[in-house]
Image (cartoon, rainbow, N blue to C red):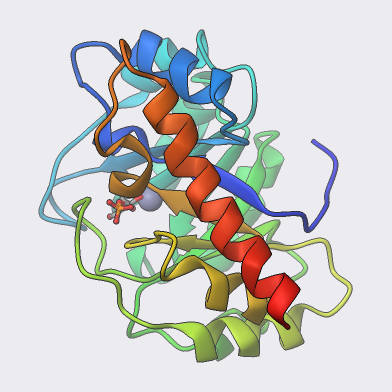
Length: 231
Ligand code: DX5
Ligand code: ZN
């Protein structure tokens, strides 16, 4: 994985057909997804429950781009090796998931993955100030984590602050929750480069109508490009 700040769309397979993950992943990649976002929930850190390491390992067989695994679990550290073995390229842990995020980020890198740190809406940008040398990605949650399809919470000011703090460091800023063509442009303008989108990508499409996924991703890219042209 080489680092760049170009716009990347990472569809969340939380909004895919749970009976057909292989074909869903193939469909979104064929339609232009840059990364594949996998939401791991434990029914404890967040109220919902999704995939464990064996499921994520099975997804890996279909992912040709980048497998971006978002852990919404606590504790994190006992599971890092299992997600490395499952083939995660990027493993993101929540800052709020335990007292030792610094150690967690070190352990993720030591296991051979890129390390991400996610911030709930109530957590300030300043919380990552002393973690930037250990992180490859900061994920700014624009919903309270746990479910797809929730209402967007505006975190533009946090993204601005993070972008200034990151400077020239090779750290991605990822946005997760309620991203669509109306919410995406201001976030990219503020300095984000990775947009996770579940409902806004999968809405109206299916593995038999994958072109809808392509059109939905294009709509996000075009909304961002339009804003760039207007600026
Ligand atoms: C929320 C997850 C998100 C979610 C986004 O807890 O981390 O990745 O799938 O879904 P949308 O785009 O529908 O808000
Ligand atoms: Zn996510």
